Image (cartoon, helix red, strand yellow):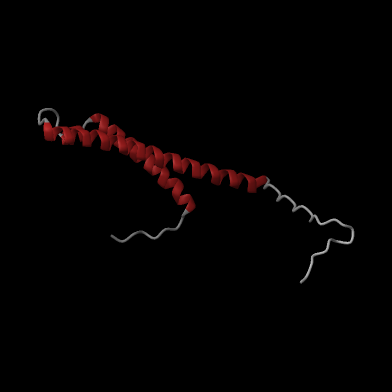
Length: 114
């Protein structure tokens, strides 16, 4: 059976670990750039998803309503409306931004084979 003994001076505390130095200069700018790029990438993807969800809700509501009430605009007419097309164009812009920023994190990607 062994027993642990304190140091000869009676102090059992260990020296505090030194705090890592914060990057400065160009390294700090790169840290901020990567952080902000990831934020823009996520925001762009989120906005694209939000717009696509709005398109889906509008089109699916018309589709379901047409099953019960055949009168009114068709699902295709609604999908081709200026409002839906504007949302689709905006979603594509957001997706392009998300893709552009995503390539900053994965500059070399194999293209999927379909």
